[in-house]
Image (cartoon, rainbow, N blue to C red):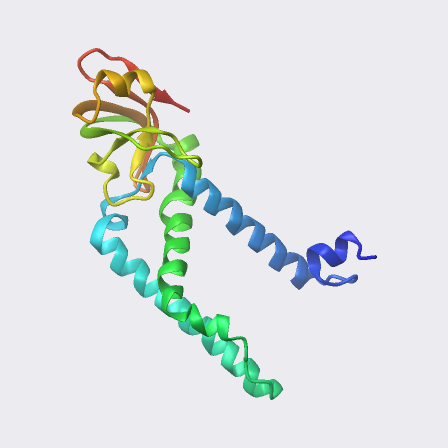
Length: 200
């Protein structure tokens, strides 16, 4: 019967390398989840077309390293990689890896620094109310504005606020903390009535 060591490390006698690899994988997974669910506006260089190009190049480089290592291993061991699934996903790998790096380096890590250590900051923005049924996220949202070009490109709002301004352009005040790494949004207020819409 396999023990927890076998389940976590793949061996009963894990080396420091095994432990380090597992910690690295778990850390990256945690940062990915964080990057998906936080309200954070990265600097302009990490948004829009320039971010797609930058992280696309990074994803392409990482894909080259991955498949290069796969080929070298196959040549060294005399066993050519025969799993066709690995080669089938090759065209999508640069996009996937670039997206992972973007979530970690442009959102999760900067947010973890900005949220506790950033200076208080606020900005006004013109955004769009939107409704979309979702099991994994919120149904009522503010889209666009400074969040355009990020992922996700919306902030959750209450159903009451959405029904007051359904599918309309509204002006809001974003309040949070800011550093050179970006802006961590803590709360959102409607400009005309100072109505509180969202907070951590």
